[in-house]
Structure formats: C-alpha cells, structure tokens
Amino acid sequence: MLEDLGYGADMENYRQEQNLDSLGVGRVIAEHRERYEIKSAQGEFEAEVIGNLRFSARERSDFPAVGDWVAFSEYEENKVLIHAVFPRRTVIEREAVGKFGEKQIIATNIDYSFIVQAVDRDFNINRFERYLTICNASGVSPLVILNKTDLISDSELKSMVESVDKRIPQVPIIAISNETRVGYELLFSHIQKGKTYCLLGSSGVGKSTLMNNLAGRDLMKTDAISSSTSKGRHITSHRELILLESGGIIIDNPGMREVGIADATKGLEATFEEIVSLSYQCRFQDCTHNHESGCAILEAVEKGEIDRASYENYMKMEREKEHFESSVAERRKKDKEFGKMVRSVMKDKRQNKP
Image (cartoon, rainbow, N blue to C red):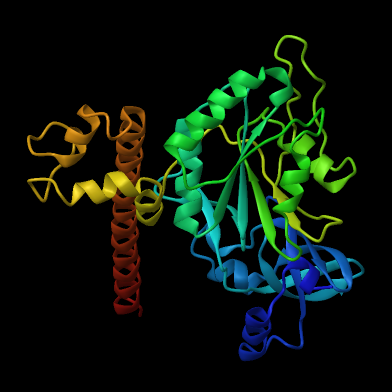
C-alpha cells in the first residue's frame, strides 16, 4: 500500500536510522493551514504536528507539505499526531507572496510536473519558462500541456506548438482537450505507477477538470462555464494528492497568479542554458548583459540567434532571484541582530539579579 503512494527503500532506511519504526508512516495528501490529511496503509487520518516539531520549526518550510512522508502516532479514532517529516527528494517552491525573503512550498517528492496552459486565453510562453525554471531548480521533470484545443483551429494549434517548442525545445508538449478528450491517450502513456505528478498553472486553465478526467470521477469542483470566456474556473483552495487507478499519483494546486523566482540559480542555468553559456564569452566578467560592448548575449540577440523575448524573460527572472537573495541576507542579518539583543537583555537581567 505504501509503495502505491511512492514509498521506497530510501525512506524505509531513514525510518530505521532515526528509530521511527515504532510509529506509523503516511503521506500528506491535503493541507488546510496547519492541519493535514495523511494516507497510510491503515487508512486516511486527520493530522496535526506535535508541540516539539512546531516549536523547533524556524520557518514555514519546516512544517509538513503535500507530498511529504511523515511519521505519526494515533491519539484518537482517525486522528493522529505528526512526529517527524522525512527528508524531501524534491521540493517545488516559489517566493512566498507578500512575505519578506521567504519561500512557499508548492509540493514535495515530485517526479514530474504537468505545466498547464489554456490555448484560448492568457497563453504566455514567458510563463512556461517561469514554471520550467522552478521545476529545473527542483530537479523535477516537466511536461507542457496545451489545454482547450477544441476552441481553436488546427493551424492555430500548430503555430502555438511550434512557438513553444522553439523557446523550450527540451520539453515534451502534449495538446489536449478536456471536452473531447483528444490527447488523453498520449497523456496517460506518460503516467507511471508509483510516480508522483504535480499540476502547475494559473486559474482557469482547466487543471481541476483535467484532474477529474484523469481520476475518472469528480474530485475537484469547478465553476460553471462562462459563455463569455468559455472557461470553467476551478475553486481549489488547497493542495491535494490523489491516487489514480492507473497507479500514478497526482497533486493538484490552487491556480497561482504570481510565480515568484526564489533561489533558482540551478533552474535558470538549465532553462536558459544557451544564454548562460554565452555569458562566459562576454568581454567583462562582471557583465550585466544590459548595455555593455562585448556582451556575447546582446550580440546573439541582435543577430537573431537568441530570441529577444526569451532574453528579456531571463533578465527579469535573474533580477527577481537577486532580489530574493538580498532579501534573505537582510532578513538573516535582522534575525542575528535581534538574537544578539535578546541575549544581551538576558545577560543584563542575570547580572542584576539580587
């Protein structure tokens, strides 16, 4: 049963090494603020973390997330306490919205990601590159899904596929329709038993309907189809893990309006490999690739060897990464200064103690 959820020998070895074998093992399948649902060989349980784990957590990422493997003990019928979170093989994360220098985990222990966009609205290759960068930073294999193909002509679809393939040629592309199920056979052929897949995409691209169709039953609610926009807007408000009849494991996510780049050096290097390789040929080592003479990247853009839109997208995400890194450094500095102040106050209190 645990193997069906992706449990492997490395996790069992960790369980033994950490003396967790007296506890149950399960996988987080849903997250509701700081309460969770986990699935184990014994069934599904409501869960919360123990006080020690909550106290030792330094930031939000130290708490369980959907996809995590956890050790637990049962304290009431169908209710358990989470004692430990197993090490994560992969973590898909972004910059936390509105939070200074912090990351937000999207999902953990993911093998493949389905990056979904609808062809009838808000089609944006820059966004594909952004999601791809997050996946590459996490070591997760991506696959592009172009949805709602029944709403455009074959020639329009062909043009879109070619434009995506030109910008990100290293990623498989599957065109589907949630309505006609065209492309589903090819999509199912990519889903392997025991592997975990994550759906990434904005609201309204059809992720929840796709999840329902893959599962063969209604799991996610969607709003009514709008006659003006020809789309159903899903109302998923939390992440949820589903075991498919085919043996694959899939995680749905709320639609993300913002996909901020965090610590993504590895992801940028993989997504924009050609641009990064050219940067080593620049005349100046500290070249900013904005205006310098002798910039190999700018020369390639002018010659048409590098797509200008891709170059501009790369530069934008590079600036976001640098901003995030500086925010992290500033936050750590403030935390360190606050810690010094607390220690100083405590020392003064001890010295003045009668």
